[in-house]
Image 1 (tube, rainbow, N blue to C red):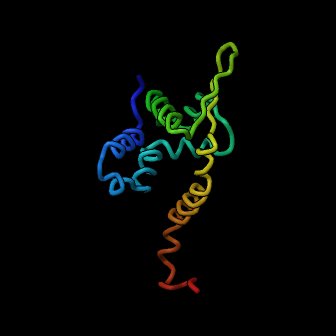
Image 2: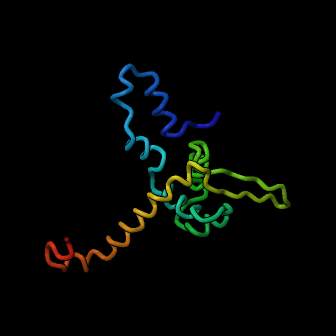
Image 3: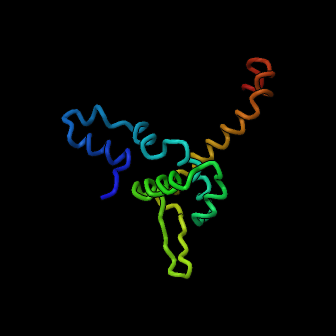
Length: 134
């Protein structure tokens, strides 16, 4: 039996609790499914095209094999990532976003914009207060 993801654990707890409505939180759900050091980065690499496992490893040299496998499995279990095994020699495995996984695309546009703005914060910090506001 495989280990439950954070979201699966939370949903089981909510179902068992008599105060379910007080516990269900969209932010908590988002953090359960997308949180952690690697999931958003993995998803960002899968946004435009399916990727092979080895390709993901090369794109993220800091992640360990064990952690990449764990994160991909959790995202597959949570319905964000699809794993396709091609019957070739040697076997080839591709990872792609499911329809649910594709729903993160607008969020990534916002994250990208925020990240670019943050990187450019020294120029923004030097601008006088209220400058550029209409």
